[in-house]
Structures are given as C-alpha cells and as structure tokens.
Amino acid sequence: MSVQLNENYVNGFISDAEVKNIQPMITTAHNLLRTKTGPGNDFLGWVTLPFDYDKAEFEAIKESAEKIKKNCDVFIVIGIGGSYLGARAAIEFVKSPVYNNMKKDTPDIYFSGCNISAEALSELLAICEGKDVCINVISKSGTTTEPAVAFRVFRALLEKKYGVEGARERIFVTTDKARGTLKKFSDEKGYQTFVVPDDVGGRFSVLTAVGLLPIAVAGIDIDALMKGAQDAANAYTDDDISKNDCYKYAALRNILYRKGKTTEILVGYEPSNQLFNEWWKQLYGESEGKDQRGIYPSSVIFSTDLHSLGQYIQDGMRNIFETVLNVEKTGFELEIPYDEANVDGLNFLAGMDLNKVNKTAMQGTLLAHVDGGVPNIVINVEDKSAHSLGYLIYFFELACAISGYVLGVNPFDQPGVEAYKKNMFALLGKPGYEAEKAELEKRIK
Ligand code: PA5
Image (tube, rainbow, N blue to C red; front, side, top):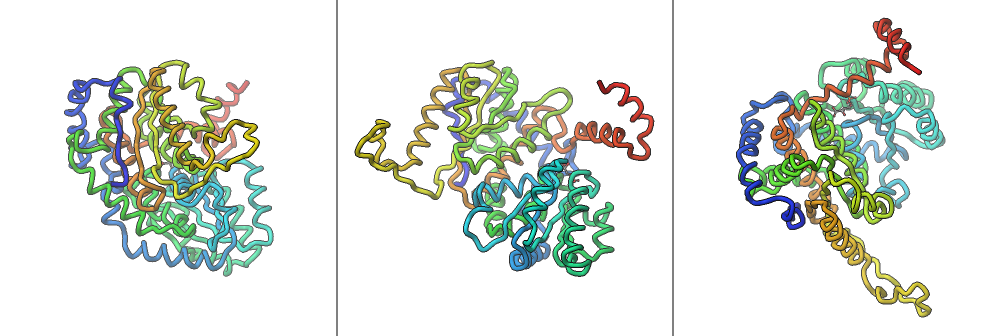
C-alpha cells in the first residue's frame, strides 16, 4: 500500500464516540459524491479521471514531451494556481527542488505567469538568453491576467528568435477544449493544444494535460503516476471510516475543526515536499475556505521550520493540528562521518544514516507536539516514486471533496478569487469598470 494513515498521535484528542458520530456525515458526503448529487456536481471529472482519461491525448502528451526534450534547453511553464502548482509539486517531489541544477538529459523547467513581478519575469528572460526555449501556456479560462501577460512576453521572445513559423513549433497550449480566447487564438496560430476537461476544476487538474505535459518533460513516468491514482481510486470506495484511510483523514480533520482546531499544518521532513505543501494548501484553501468557515491550511518543512515556527507550534495558541506527511524511503543514504577530534561531540552519531536522524527528529517532534496539546495525524507514503505521488494526489483530492461536503460547503467553486481581480481591473482602467474605479480610488489611502 502506497499511503497509510497512523492515528496514534491524534487518539488522545478524539474519542471513539466522536469518530462513530461523524460516520453518518461521511456516508452522506460519500453518497453525494458518488451519486453526483452534491453542490458542484458538474466538476467531478477528477473522480474517475485515473480510469477514463483521454488515451489518445495521453499519447500526444508523451509525443510532445519528447519533442520538447529534443528541441529546448529551457522549458517555460506559464500558469497560476491550479494551472501550475501540481506540475511544480510533482517535479520537486519526484525529481528534486534543485531539478534545474542536476545532471540530466531533460530541459531546465521554469514557472512563469504565477505572479505579477517584473523582477521575476526579467530574470527569466535573462536566463533564456542564448538558450533554446519552448513554452507551455496553461489557462483553463484563457483570460487570467498573470499568465496572459507572461504569454505575451514569451511569445514575442520566441517569434523574434525563431520567426512566427519557428515559434509555432515551440508553443504548447493547455486550455478549454472549445471555448475561450486562448483556444481561438491557438487554433488561428496553429499551436499544438491540450485540453483541460470541462468537468475538472483547476486545483483538481494535475492528472490532466495541465500537470502531465510538464511532468513528462521532466522525465517522470506519467503511466506510473496515473496507475498510482488508479490504485488509490480502487482502494477508497468503502464509506466505512474504519476501512478507508482517506475518509478517515477527512473525518479526523472535521472532528478537530469542530473542537476549535481551525488551522491545519501540513508537515514535511524533506525540502522536496515544499511545493507539494503549496499544492495541498491551494486544494484545501480554495475548496473549503468559504461561507465564513473552513480550516486554514498552512505548512512547514521540518526540521528547518522547527527553528522558526517550532516555538509557536509547541507553545502558542492551541487552535492548530498537524498532518505529517512521512516519506518512508527517500531513495538516498548518507552516513555521518567519524571525526577523530570530535570537537562537536557528535561521534555518537558517526556511521549513522542521516535518514535515521531525520526519522528520530520526526518521532521526537511528534511526541513533543502532542505533549504541547497539538493533535498529529500521520500519513505515511512509501517513497517518492511517480506511483506513490499519483496515489497521494488522489488521496488528498478525494479527502478534500468528502471533507468539504461534511463541512457543508461547495468544494468545487471559488467565488472569492474574483474580488481582487475586479478591483485590480477597475484600478488599472479596464474598459467597463469606470464606476468601480472612481469608488475604489476614493478609498485608497
Ligand atoms: O483552482 C482554480 O480554479 C484556480 O486556482 C485556477 O487554476 C487559477 O485561477 C488559474 O485559472 P486559469 O487556469 O483559468 O488561468
């Protein structure tokens, strides 16, 4: 089994009766999801995606990935939110956070269009100088400002460098299958396009072309990734919490939330978990944070953050719980060297594998935080393989949907994301926003 939940560090905070009492709510959520009768039921394509994904497109993704690997030194992935986090998380988790600095036969991969920073864009343009570049612009709506700006900039770069014809061979577009300006524009220009299915929302889209193309370009086995998700989908069909770790996670976090634990911290012990944490935060934050409720998703990497946020977690306000994502096999071994002088007094560790020290740090921290009043759910994942990642992605997506239904929200919309966009467009003077602009300007101090 790729993923397994350990509830031993949460038991002291939750009684058996509480778990029994939440079972009917989990069953209701399960039925809403499986019969497609809950809120947001037109966005449930991700549930069966590991089985019924478009096989022809899957092969086309692999072909394009090969072409990109052959034709470029630098591959720029342009997208924001659900249109970039999954791919970036996967590349860092399975390959490395320093993927670009590693010896490899795949292109360097950079992410753009996920901010409005002149600094970040200028730096990336400088990195591209003298290099062969391909781009993948990803936007379901095709109208999101951040990626649209970056796409303008990189399209101009490619057209200048390779001409309009040459640029066409280097631009890959992932967007809606029929609607939207990006699709229309791509068809006119003759770009290779891939589809974000209508019934899969951005934050649930990593196992579509949105994530799969960049992940394949990084040399990750996307067949294994899908197989992992498939295995997870097959494993979590029973609505009985005692037989379903995924639903148990949804149940435990809802019980804790109702007891005032309003912040969940996803904990990793490997720096390569950092972007996975970010993907998870978007998934849960955008799915649950609405109607003035929802658990606030936060994250840390230990032991790094034990030297910054560790004090707060141990001793601060008791409204938090942790979910520890424990990668059992890292794939690396590193022995601590013996030092004759032993100035640092560390010879008691000489010959020990650093993984053992890291695991011991985890055990010590789990006990300390539980003693400090912080419940800990532990999720063990076998390794950092593509298969395990696919399994884990599906585990968290399914748990998020069940959890959102138990919370009583629509886990598949994101009405709150529009507010800043409206204000930004009005203040920038977008036609049609004249009245709002005047009102907003009066309020700026
Ligand atoms: O999860 C979501 O729906 C969002 O985070 C979107 O992915 C994000 O806003 C980008 O949208 P789009 O792909 O339409 O550019």
